[in-house]
Length: 404
Image (cartoon, rainbow, N blue to C red; front, side, top):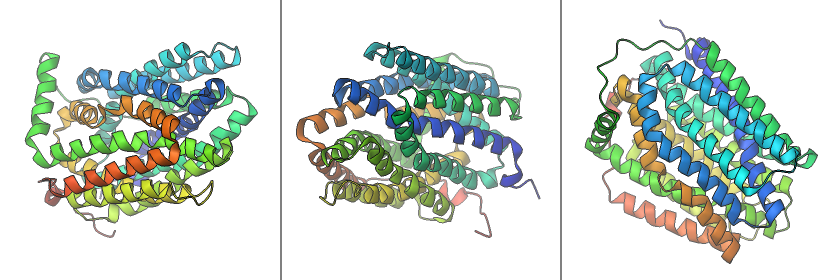
């Protein structure tokens, strides 16, 4: 019998580093828009900053995916996370010295997005390298739990740090990235075996794109993720506006957003036990997303959105783990970095406009009306998905794990 996932030191180092850095990210995800709104009074400008970061990430993803398949994965993780630590430290210094203008926010957000484009496929490839195939489903579930646990503590902590000092959330973010880089350095990620002869970058990308296109179910699921990422991402700033419209403070906003983490942790625990195929599961997830987004607009007080956000977050890990497990079975190991980049780009290509769209609509018609509009569009997406081919050929090939 091989080493259990719990005793897999390489995976647990990667997981711990990711957990710490994810906490820092969730802290600044709340702190950044709150700070910009406090400085400018605009809900659009935080969306512009988030959109710039997303655009930089997406534009870099394709070449980053190719290079990750060629470079040393451990060094890629270490360098990308070290630069992110430096970026967060520079932003904290800019805020502390009074130089936190929009240009500084945008430039540093762009650098952070570029680093994430390298770190994300490198991390995916590293996990596949250190975890046996029969343990990948549980590994992905643990990864989901990591992110959602951070979302429980991050938003309230971010609000508290903001109250103590506007630069403190970004100081903490810098420290968490430094810890993540150290964990990646000490993790013994196996070196690659003899690689195939390198093609030109466009050929490598064409191979990955062609592979994904031939997988009809995964291809259509990716399109659905595209719409869900657009509408789901656009709904976040309206939640901020809704809480503010109802008289909530920054700390109240943090507590409401923590609902995503609470529900996500529960969903991560359930994910390995869910046997529903990705297609029907995606339709169920879309339906829950749409209904809950509509429900957030109900006039039940400042903290009410916590409940639908938590319910929505319960189903998110279910579809993420299901699709990740399918990809781990189907995707050739030497294509994992490229495929992760191609599929992520395809699913997130519209996310740069998502925060700006949400901020614009929240500022124009208010948080409640914006949420009603986005919820209705998500339900329309669920209806269209119900008549679309979303099945995958890999579900029956997934390794069976007993004793669940």
